[in-house]
Length: 359
Image 1: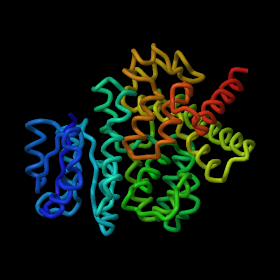
Image 2: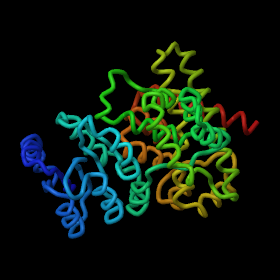
Image 3: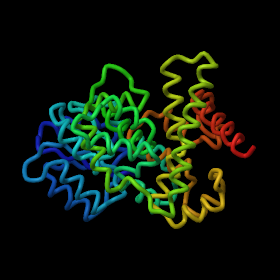
Image 4: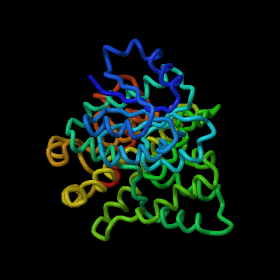
């Protein structure tokens, strides 16, 4: 059974969680503790699969606890369970939390957050690689949009609208902003499909904190520049192709936006592997300069295909399942969820763009 650890200094909250999840006793091995120190002690004795922590606690708050958990047990999925007033502190903990939930949390949302951490483990069977992916809090920014974004956010009169448009052109930053606004505690009355929309909702100060924290991490080394350039270009090409194809199918505006975002993020697994395994990634890129195939050879080299790794990361970050599914199966749409239009759109758009390159 998966081991789930709940941490909150309020006894009534822990009691409420016990009652709420009583029917999961035969599915999960659950433990409930009242302090960060006690949580760390238990994790050091026996690692847990998921830790769900309050943000505001005395002595060691949730942000510092999750930072310690990330170091002691990097493979553990880290979920913040917090109040609406803790938004600013939660933005600061973006490095160490995978998902954010609003307190009080409805049972189905809490169960879904925990269950999704295990539902896609079959995509990445290699435990070491799963642990490495779980440690990622952000990804390098790519291409000319990254430099423009960093410059814009550093200006005294920076434009949030312009910055939001640049965020949308960068796969790593796009995924990170979507992660933040899809947090349950953000309590949005509307669904967010586009990274630019997510950036606007975050607001200038929160977006600037996230972007500027990425500055030392935004560039690949010189040897990886061809890969970075290709990833940036192919993401943009497939995003616009997928949106155009969706429009031709008379899709709704929401569906067009979903297609654009899925297209932009479809190769994010390549970015993950290039970040975690740069030498292997450069070797594989040299062999496949027009795009990485998701095949047995890639599986053997990395422990999973880039498509599976991309889907796994987005699932950890709590992004919508349709988007996760489209990324995870963009090379093999027949193996994903049957009848998913978004999945088929991204796969077809990727193939169309690749055929243009080969011609």
